[in-house]
Length: 460
Image 1 (cartoon, rainbow, N blue to C red):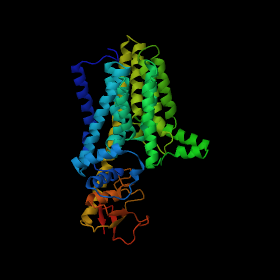
Image 2 (cartoon, rainbow, N blue to C red):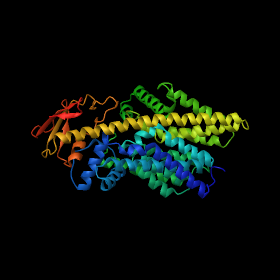
Image 3 (cartoon, one colour):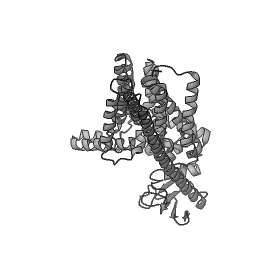
Image 4 (cartoon, rainbow, N blue to C red):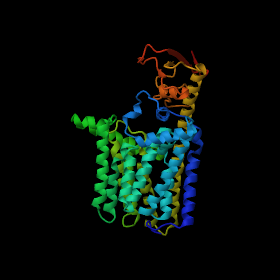
């Protein structure tokens, strides 16, 4: 069966059940995790919006992401401030994206079975943990869903629908800005460049940039723009190089390579994949997957950092390269049985190591969520009914605002303690600070608390 054939209904149903089951097994157990860091800000903002209340300016408002804001508002209407409802939505979004990847791979590039394998490898990639298990990581999930659906619609020559979803992706996350380039790549690779859709997508993009300008939404975090305006070429090169290393390390995490050589290793995989598939249909999969990685990483090259969850969309490109390369090796050494055994073993090892890395990240996030929930509950136990306007000054959580749980290696309250307090007591007038932070309103009632690491409680 060619990549353009439509799978039969029974096979399609089986694939849907299999892919959804894999995602459920990977993430279902994480639905019991709590909120972490920015999660509190998004949920508290949703609570205030639903309740018609004004809240202090939150750092999340530097972004233009109304689709994400509305997703949290709808989630709050259904789930309130209970974390499980938000985690469940993220898991469902991951299912949707995995199915979209399956359809994209099967409809455009590879055979039906290979398309299913691409989706399975995509669902197992450890970069997805930060997008799925961390509630506010749904920025990646919703933007990717709209991005992938827009790509499918573009292939079906439904440009207006694709443009609408492109707008949704942009209003979910800024990194969706690369979609017109993906559409251009697809057209160039198939029937030739179509001008009308590209004009439509460019119009959407210009409209988005105009809205950002009118709303004075900042581009904070895009250090590359600042370096370029100052003419610091060396600084730009260093920043781009650091981001490329971060992206390659995140994509190749299942192999566990050192950071610096990861770019060369990834480039070597791409070159090897192009060589093994020369002259066969799978060559298109490797070529498109390679360009997909480049184009979806491109918006992050000027950003101040590259965290693993940013590799969510680029991981599709890597899986296309891997599956295309596997198909090329089997075809090159056919009909030798050993080639199929070796390729199956390599893909199996990749799946196992990717799943192990994914579950390690899931466990870390789960422990962080559990710890942050315990801290908020302990605070509420000591001060069950704070007066309106109270400021909690919290000491003892460590320099990174981390509860002293040795099994939690990353901070649980770098951001979000103030929002967590407001959300816990449903009072937008409350605030929280740490001893080294100046108090904005010294006339407000203050409650000083110290975290006791031995008992896991606060002492007033």
